[in-house]
Amino acid sequence: MPKKFRSKCPMTNLLDLIGDKWSLIVVRDLFLQRNTFSQLLNEGEENISTNILSDRLKKLKESGFIDFVNDRNDHKVKHYYLTDKGMDLNTVLYEMSMWSNKYLDRDFNKVSTYFFKVTQDLSRDLVISKSKSVYKEERDKLLDYHRNQQLYNVSF
Image (cartoon, rainbow, N blue to C red):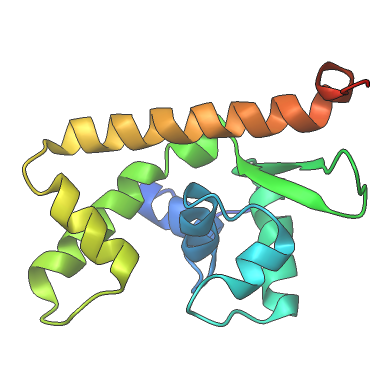
């Protein structure tokens, strides 16, 4: 977390933490189960550079929005995940997406188009809570798998 915020405004304080061009894109991608550096770098359409991605991952971790676990088979690979604090940004992502869908006259990518289609008749609160619970379930599986290697060993 920054040692000094620009003001005492809650919105400015949040922007001090995640208000750059890339941080919320990284958070979005983690919600989309892109959890390794390689996936974050290559699977999004925004073409983030490696140095920017490294910097944002470091800042998001320092601020407590994300953490990582080392891959159980290759300790050079880190699996990043959203903390509970990071998962709570889902509301921000949802509202930004809904605003864009309402006011920007354009076609969106397949993931967004599908999201808008399947959630159009659902309440905001249901969409947000369901997506958080689905993410949490997947996050817990990821952590369990990489932290509890002995449970997954298969002997023949």
